Length: 121
Image: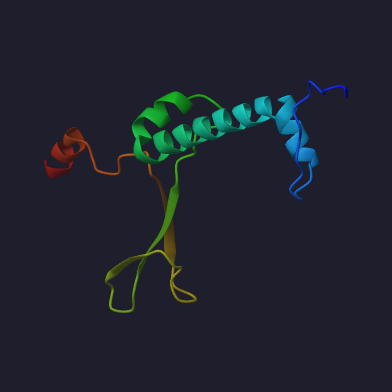
């Protein structure tokens, strides 16, 4: 009488066993995938907050190296040949005297009510 194997028979259908399949079977690639999924979820959450909740992101980033700097707009104020004031974002023609004004995006450029009262007196 022949001995019987207790091992189940394995059939090879021509695919062969690759290195990645062997790693998946021993479980060594599972932690990397989990960490990658967690990192992607955190990145997507941060992108959502930064894009859709700007005020919340600004409060979180305040006084950190990641705090965005305010934008500065440069304009040129000058008079044309007819004596009319021109305010543009490009320098005036050659030879015209002009004044450079810079405005920060986080600054209020409107005069305060007190300044308006003093000006109108």
